[in-house]
Length: 360
Image 1 (spheres, rainbow, N blue to C red):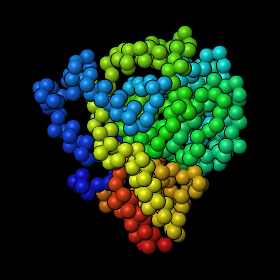
Image 2 (image 1 turned 135 degrees about the horizontal axis):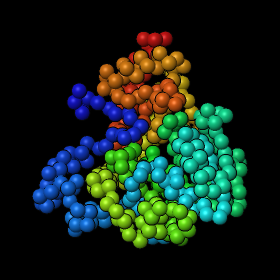
Image 3 (image 1 turned 60 degrees about the vertical axis):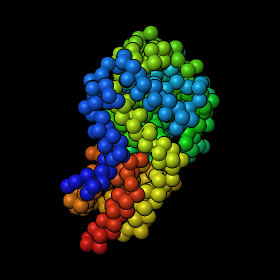
Image 4 (image 1 turned 135 degrees about the vertical axis):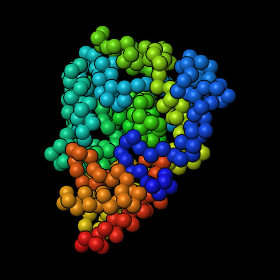
């Protein structure tokens, strides 16, 4: 199949805008007349510094990040932040964690190695099919921070409100950053792996209130200390240069499309197409509570593993790839990140109806 014949619904690494890939391909062997690829040039060179500065400036502009917050471009994926956050913020106290899916559960488990963790909400009894209401959160007024994962890629749920807490908010926005406006002044720290909406895997963006830096545990490795990475502008060691370059190109694309507000409008359009098909279906059912449905990851099932497998195989044969659910949850999943056109959602919805006519 050609690229034009494929719609990639992978949860990550995920689809990137075609124009971004074409621009990267055109500059692959010779970036900006340097005679080098970005993958070859020194991270201390003037050419790469320009790329780095442009990426940070674009993030600050598009996300309206206040000057009180630093933007860090780091390695280690979101998983490294499971440890870095408590190592930097938990000293001498406890933290509240809302466990609404696999990744927030892993984050809480990791944090326990470095201090006391309270579970402010636990969705496991409901199969992680919903987000807790504000009055269901058990909050400690003395907590160092409150941690949650805004969008749950495996279970297809999303927080559609910002929790009100007395302590700093820490949020994993790996799968929905750049898809809706965010008031970063309400957050102590936001982080996101890049491989959903920003760039290839290998880069993690951390947006941190600078007032929280410098509180790390003595055992915190230098490369995981926020204060050190702020001071060195994310260049204590060689940063993920290619990913930062790809981030910069993707941010240019987001700006050309109309910015984050336009990304939110498109996200709602795509999700409405698939949820509309689910709500009218006699075969498939959604896995998340309606009011908590994710705009990024639509999870559903026929209720039969064999039928789900046949649907995924049939979809792939039609160029609708990677709709198999996560191995821990089963079922089916369609990820609708920024680079997915509405036509992709419409074609998948069309195939859902076709498949249902043949199997009901």
